[in-house]
Image 1 (cartoon, rainbow, N blue to C red):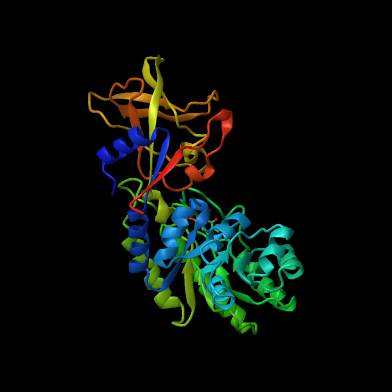
Image 2: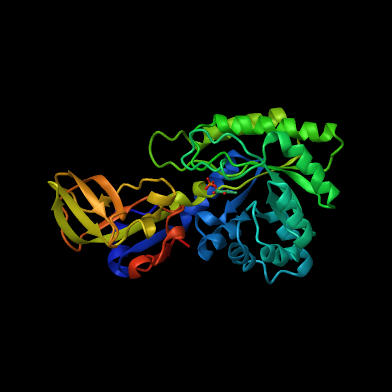
Amino acid sequence: MITKAHLQRLGREHGTPLFVVDHDALRKKYREFRKHLPRVQAYFAVKANPLPEIVRTLFLEGASFDVASMPEFNIVYGNIQDMPPKQRQDWIWDKIIYANPNKPDDTLEELNQYKPLVTFDNAEELQKIRDHAPQAGVVLRLKVPNTGAMVELSSKFGAAPGEAVDLILQAEKLGLTCEGLSFHVGSQTTNFENYVQALALCANLLKEARDRGYHKMNLLDIGGGFPAPYDDSVKPFRELARIINRELERLFPKDIQILAEPGRFLVATAGYTVSKVIGKAVRDGKPSYYINDGVYHTYSGVIFDHCKYPVRSFKKGPARISAVYGPTCDALDVVSMAENLPELNRDDLVYSENIGAYSHASSTHFNGFPPAKVVHVNT
Ligand SMILES: Cc1ncc(COP(=O)(O)O)c(C=O)c1O
């Protein structure tokens, strides 16, 4: 946990905008995940924050990885490149899943040498895998309810339950082995019923596949979606874990391998941003502050992730509802229209917590402003 004073010191020392990663927080969340879901192997979804230092810390903790592009694969690979070839190959098979259901031909060709697990959700993709990565193992991604998730994914991904077993048998016909099933309940899922329904669907489909003569599936990937504690309305992780454990116990045999792809849950609380007031005005009677970080940069999650990150002041004073704008010339660059802030002056620092996921990862260079400088603490 980084204190307010420490954060302020870092901002003064390194300059702003600054993105701070607390590696103790990463380790804490990884251990919490493992403690409450002991049957589940945790594959960190690198897309949530692909900084190599974050991947390294989780690698040293024993994490596995969900990658969704060749550059993400290579960040993980950097940690194992010096292993003896056989050990490296076993590690890749056991600890990496390429979980983007749509892969370009050249990515598949590059992946083939590593014989990884990859996901698919349609017949066209199966044919592509057969043609360009025949050594890969495949996992079928299912469409499941994403009700109430902050970021819904099921409109774009997942095979319909009615076509699932046909696709599995189709994979076999093409000489591929379908190792199991996967799903994603939507990111920042606070409706835990989504997991219950998805697990029931998987149990039914495993049975249907066996009834139709397919016995090679031994893997269940329960995806991401585990919520970060952005506010008090998010129920504790142990409650979700209790529900998942109960359903896993009830519906699946002991020897099935269970994995998950937590992204946000592992990195959200490890990230902080510190920025500086570069201008101020009164707009429509409201105090309005222009800071040197915004929605094209670390606050990009406001747009892409539908997330809010309260902007806080280091100094105290009577608070007023204020607007906070980013530094670019675009009127979309609004961090918040309603923050409770004391009167701020130019050069005052402000900060946000719980901004480690889908934030710095989607920062751009728009308008000539580079992404925030990164500082790692407690490495
Ligand atoms: C396939 C897949 N797995 C895992 C994740 C990580 O999800 P979360 O950050 O909600 O845990 C995502 C996020 O988009 C995803 O698309």
